[in-house]
Amino acid sequence: MQLSQGSMAASGDDDMADLVISSLPLETRCPPYHLRQHGGFWFSEPFLPAVAAARARFEARPSDVLLASFPKSGTTWLKALAIATLHRADHPPRSLDHPLRRRNPHDCVETRDSGDDVLAALPSPRLLATHLPYTHVPKSVTTEGAGCKIVYVCRDPKDALVSKWLFTKKRLAFAAVDDSPPKPYTIDEMFELFCDGRCTCGPQWHHVLGYWEASRRQPEKVLFLRYEEMLRDPVGNVRKLAEFMGCAFSVEEEAAGVAEEVVELCSMDTLKNMEVNKNGTQNHVRNEAFFRKGVAGDWSNHMTPEMAARLDKIVEDALRGSGFAFGATAESA
Ligand code: A3P
Image: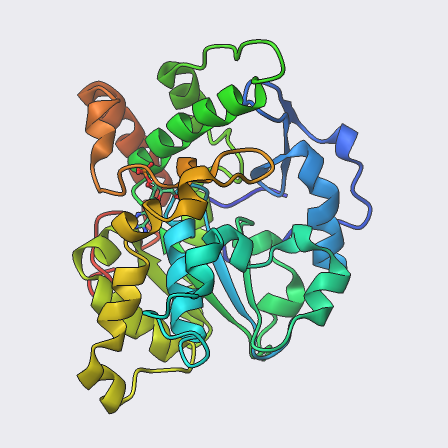
């Protein structure tokens, strides 16, 4: 299937049931995994069977909320905010035993890797997460009329690239502890691959566009957030998130500053300094690697102006005619 430039709406990977992974285009230069291309996107090869299985078998519930993102675009933050907002009645943000004080946000939200039984056993409303492009999300989620909702967070591609590069280096170093020393992985190597769309779930701009278009078609179903705007107005974005998830802050909660408490609990400073995030690990990386600077524009400390201009041009060309632009505000795009 070919993706039409500037529009993702026409794409549909339809069946992954007959997928022969070894026949798909292969990219071997993106550590830690080989990538395979399917439906216009690149996927980590070891995860493709689970993607196909989830697409075929996952049964969405009308009350599900799916948190979606391209990697390194604010997933951890969005997960924390969604958990703290959705479960605030049972777990007030200031409570000392709040789940986010004991567990990394990634450990509080399920993904397709959790397995069918775990997902089926979860009480409603379920909070789930994915990095899959919109075209590859299980149909039971995207079908019109399915009540479940999607919250997507997008980020400037240059910052996502730099964040991904630094994260991958940490990940390779972690994996290499008992193994041979990690092979150096330069920003130039990652830049070339990223510009060509060759990274997990890339091209990044097509990933973003798929969800943006879905949010325009079905605003009641897909909430499209921007990382940069969340940094600028975290409380406003948390209110938006709460309203979208069907649990708007009440007048009493507003008066008590609950939205501000959610933002405080999920802030970079608070999360970064929690014991579980300083010293805990996921199976492939230390939790601390998920919390770096958390700012907009850090790309300029790692990329030259020429690199930035080249990537901006690629993205601009790819998005021409779509109506979407990075850097626009929610109101203007
Ligand atoms: P930087 O590497 O630019 O600092 P993801 O969660 O999708 O993996 O994205 C990681 C990026 O989100 C990292 O960006 C990380 O620092 C930032 N981040 C993590 N937690 C955050 C928070 N609570 N507030 C703002 N940014 C956060």
